[in-house]
Length: 305
Image 1 (cartoon, rainbow, N blue to C red):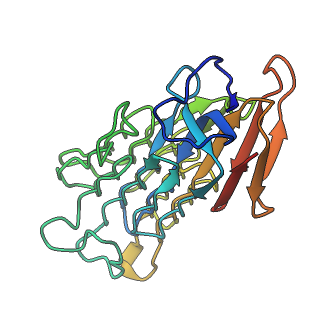
Image 2: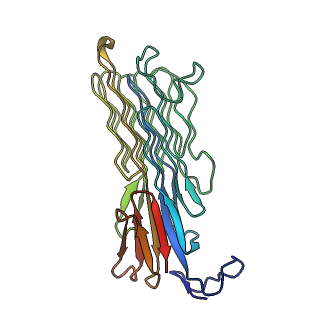
């Protein structure tokens, strides 16, 4: 029974593979969809969960055809969706807390009187609304090891809202006039190039400046009379918070979360086929040793031959 491996010598014994199966030992990066934010000085959306074996982690052994799910980014006020590859699930980012109690657009899941101002837990947690101590929205929910994300921020009495958590750092608290930045994501070179993923969305500014999106696709927040920016597509970035609505006449919505992405990296001897055609398979040049990388920007399947 062949075992294609980038690490060499790993045994498939005990995994229940059938004689003659083609088995590949692969690394992975699985990033979920980022959480969306809301209008009227709202907190930033949390980044999608970030789980990886590259570099130096525990690889997976796969065979045949494996389903791959790429999580969608959350619409304004909603959490992102999970991304899944084999036994690895990364949870969607939590939504940012809604802005003013008088906000005319309350679309998110956190609209009960008890929790409408807080960020929502997720792969990384959403940031809390402005001027509210709130409950910190935890990241790494549900918990995995190593952690898949970080919490959103909250702060007592701040005028600016709070940033959503990112894969590498918690969200930043707002100040009296300025929104807090989203937590930074992580850089990963599984694709052959170093790219950052899973940055948190910035919290909206009360009167001056909205918080910056976290490195890794987090959306920048709005401020007085401006909208939040969406998280970047296929990074799992959280959406930026929507700015205030002068006189209540104009709705300035928060940004949607960015969709997730999945990478699978295997040895040069493995046959990889990714479907549908939107997804791709590339062969990396030296010094990567001719490794093959399947990139999934939409849900599909990976077949090993």
